[in-house]
Image 1 (spheres, rainbow, N blue to C red):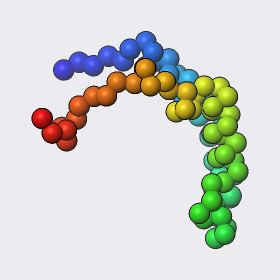
Image 2 (cartoon, rainbow, N blue to C red; image 1 turned 180 degrees about the vertical axis):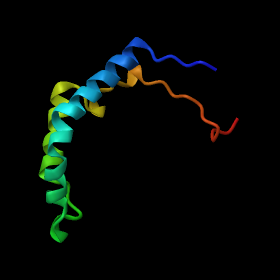
Image 3 (cartoon, rainbow, N blue to C red; image 1 turned 90 degrees about the vertical axis):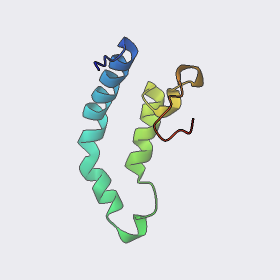
Length: 80
């Protein structure tokens, strides 16, 4: 079986890849510094909150996905 990504899928992959390279990878060390202290273990680090806000602003976040574009697909765990 041969699977090809749609043009929309390829575009989204490219956008996510670009966002990761430009914004996430440069702050990885900062993220680990912010989650290192024992008191910060159960809180979302500020750097992650900032990245989520930026992703939403750029339309790269999962929140930008509209329900009309999402299709449910059956899995092997779905009862008949």
